[in-house]
Length: 297
Length: 312
Image (cartoon, rainbow over all chains, first blue to last red; front, side, top):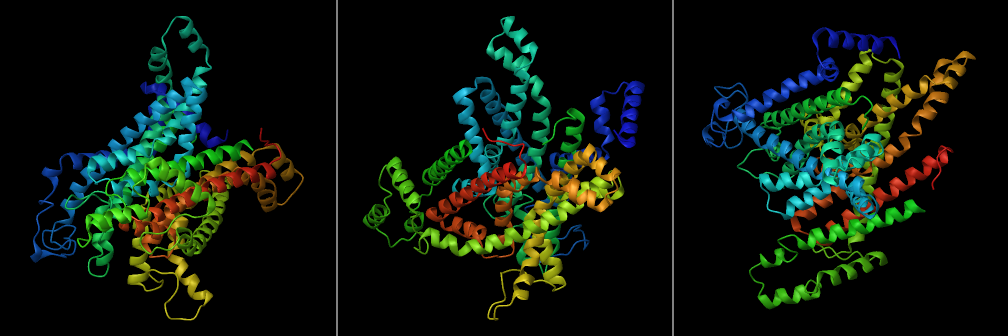
């Protein structure tokens, strides 16, 4: 171990002893970027929740007289779009959609991934083989192809897009959970629980799942980031969230046509996606270090 | 041998999914005909019969799969050319773009990774690690849009799309000029994993005894890094190239769409709008084959380069 990390370890120990902070929390707070990311995500979530109070205007109100107002012009902080709608208000409301899709899709993929991974590891044999081949199939198809196909053929709504993204992104979680449970299954306390007459269900719920939360939490966090990105790709290509509903992705859908006249339309939604996704990825990174230093994805 | 069998099983899975997906989806392949009002019910029935759409799905799948093996991937509903020919037309564009981006990403990623490992916890290392995270978080299409906006629209340095200038004789310089934008964008998607894995691979190797021995016997520092450490650090990265393939195809799809690059990805997006089932399935399966073969190749190379690995 080199000097720097040794010093960091000492610092963590000192802090944990001094203020009774759990080591995991200490490791997380050492990650300055993860803290910064958490702050950004909290702010984004709050703006999304309180969108009606925060947004200066109605995001759907069309006023052709003021169309293409540049940013910082009059009362439009970020300018207006080709229909004269306020860009800032639209961004705030779009955050609602994009974040909802991101977090709900993560829930879907975490639940499906955990279930599949647990079942595969616990049952073993043919069940395991089958599910792992299904996972392989998922990994050999570029997810964007699958997403676009599904999104193009199912009438797009917030719910269907969420389901599509969630159901095409559980494979990594399933593999992680399977690996974790296989390791835990070999430990002595499982043997003890079995000897004590624990049922399969109890074994899974009380012993196996609680011992695999760390990888699931980390994978789920990174999944939120990926889901937000996925939504933006599909919406950008026109197969995701449909107008007049705004998402960060579909606001970029037509931005290319107005490059010369209204570049701000292309800049801000992309910045929002980047901000949200970067922040969540940093949180995921911090969580990985905090919860399980051995875990490497 | 077992890997080969697994690859085959996965491929069958892919075809089943592709088939089920496209045939059970609402709308159906006749959507583009039903929208044309001049078509009567009997015309529709005739077309449906000619395309074989009135048979039970398993029969359709069996027929389609046998044809697939024989190399007959059906004809595009849109331009009625054989799907494989259509794909073959677009393949060189995609391959050119992907190879150039991969080379760029490996070059930059490995260099950054080595420097980061040698100067661990320096400002450079910190910036590189953070930058890698940010580059993974930027939506590819938006980065492409910004590239076009800054370097094509505002500065006029690079073309905003296409593979070559129309109506001009072939010139390598012109082709390279058109490559700059898309390759930068697609390269950025791929570079972060390379720098990250190179860095951790180098860190693992740098402190091993044989590297210390090399240093101790007076081998010059750059040679230790390149000849002794890097060679061993890079071996595990072989598999990364295989694992990255789906990412590469996905990124290519988005990049091609933004830069109107004539490749497979853009062809896929175009075909979506037409519900061109044979083409969509063709591209999906073709990509899957390439991904599976790529992974197989990476695994085999891994075993060749590292004699410690054996397949059971």
